[in-house]
Image (cartoon, helix red, strand yellow):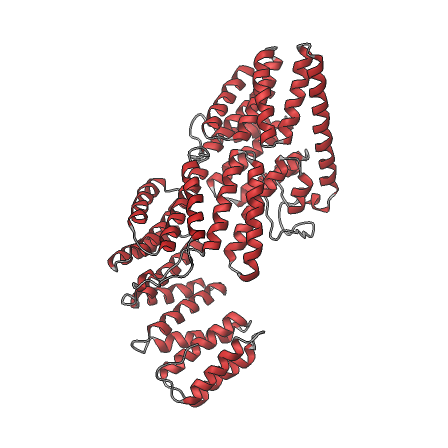
Length: 575
């Protein structure tokens, strides 16, 4: 709260000083701060002071009280009065920005849009505010899922920044647009845009932290684009660059010289947030590649960093990061034989499969299908639902309908490499259960080819052990051994307890059939150990109150959840 140059005397400075003192007290004395600011109006101040005081009052009431009606009144007056005053840009555009934010919080989005449009129209001679308001309106459209309008505004912002001579802010607008285009799956537009962004970022010479933050933004988009397509191996060079980039940022001094160009006064994310983001995409990569111990290690590091940040920072993005990280740690728990721990952190869907509750799994996957329009998520759910139908063994018509919609041989609904590989595996699994072994081998070899190409280790392990099972049934012991032994080694490396159980069972039967008594005994002992571990985990999970979540498909959860690690969510992964 700064005094206006036209302040009408010492009374104004005194009231303003008292208001600021009360606002910054520990704890803040907001009621007294408001009283001091309201007292300004008793002196019939000039329009500049009146508008600024309405803005200060509206901001304090909006941020620190529940008196939304009075906050709205002051913010609207600040916006109305300031528009009639020339050379009063900071108050004018801050009033428009905060008023629009307030409207959105009150679900009055249709009131926010005209305020922002008017402010954008009259702010073209004020570069900082013009860019900031364009970002704000673009974000509003993005939150409404109107990505076309949001992309148009970001394009306008990029061109404006170019004209104003700020390649840094131009890159921020273009990278933001690229992020939305990725969300829309407009890949034909994404590729040239990212190429342009890469050139701008590499050529721009400016503040080192700003330059590295642009590189992080650019590389995060590239990495997530690869991971979204299931290209786990192809992404490695970009991921390595990203990890090196965040190390560079962490070593840079925070003492910054502010840019001389007002259009460049923006940050993408604080570097502490960027560190967590890089941990998060590393976890996503490790999960897809099947490096579950590595995924758990980086998740623990990221969650520890998040806990420290949340003590000082209430930014909503930190909660989003935490939820995504918890999703992935839950997937790890389910695969590595820690269902009880996963359930306490809370998961559903494939948890039901892991405890053989097929009816519940079907109900939850079906409910999830009705809640999403996201094509990749829809395909992911359908793939898992198909695995439920196969295991139930009596849902032939429903299964046939699903498989027609995720046929990996033609018209597969999404471009994801790993989802297509998983669809081949599902076909192979079905053919195995139907006794069509040659057809099963064809599908599984396709899965192996795709999973090996992109280091999808869990799919590789599952395909190898299923092929080993087929060769054992066909009496081809040598080929069976060639499949099962590497499957066991890979499953141990991941580690995947269910594949280890399956592999040890096959090794026991295989060695018994070949007359290798000692090896058969050793495999039988391994199988018993894995069985005991999984059974104990199964019993522990089923005894928890959270187990009742298997019957939850709508409304509030049937149990009160009290996780120890903060926000929670669902999802388990076939991949």
